[in-house]
Image (cartoon, rainbow, N blue to C red):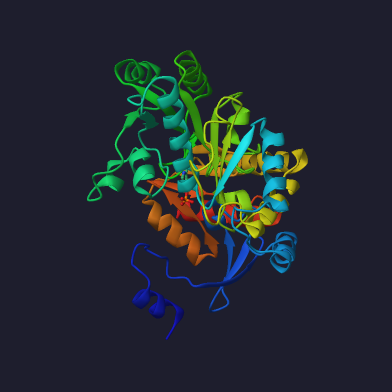
Length: 385
Ligand SMILES: *Cc1c(COP(=O)(O)O)cnc(C)c1O
């Protein structure tokens, strides 16, 4: 049987796949089972920070796999300790909990906010404010955190205690805090799945101040915006924010499953022995991959990400399209249905994503200038077609 028919017979139909079976890749290029080449502007939804099968990344993974692949969290291992140190040093945060996904990182964040509030204000202070159009994951708690009704339908009751605010409406946000017993706030600086919607810097600062004034845990979901994607290691660093908790995953280990929940000095000691855990969390192979990824994201690399993002914005703006996002996280408002644009791009050897009704690009951060120019020409052709 073919890859596609076997998959369709045996894999639960939770994904509407494109009619492409990818068999190998290198950097921003990949090839399907018929040998057709594509330039990939998706990086596995912001996961493959250095593209497909990057040789430096692959060596780091193989070396660790040959040395020690897993021990359980009953023992110390070098890679996760070293990775936690890198994350804290480069963010100013104090402690890290490792899980395997974005949803798990956010679950950890919610537990931290609730325990902090329970201990400081009382157990009835359990509410978490998130934002309309947000996306925080697929578990029942992170679905509840996700401010999009469509995802909730038929899966209720979800975890209770989530309230939804509108981005850029500070009065509405403050009213929710006055009228409810709130433990924490969780937001994306740029909503990814919700349509590459940017929150304004002023609004983010006002949310942070309101949280500080009310002793509410301020949490930023950097699952998609993190790990170099927006041209800084984490996007909040460009808004001069000081979150109490930062979650990340997707690009962190460059293609292996890893999530992290970072805590500042205020939240570092909230969780203690037995409060949380994960069998695979901090896995040495994933941690070695993440060390390799983060070590390569120096200032020169991040400024190159900015430049590539600027290039995409200039080209698309000049072609008459509205563009949102930062760095290599790009949302494009299309004139015709986004599905048609994606199909035309596939025809011409470029893979793109959508986010609601926008075209979304999350290219590998090391996409070459040549690949980027070719892909953007194809995309503009498809948008104009
Ligand atoms: C993808 C995503 C998640 C969920 O991550 P998983 O690894 O799929 O659990 C959470 N938050 C944001 C902002 C995301 O983009």
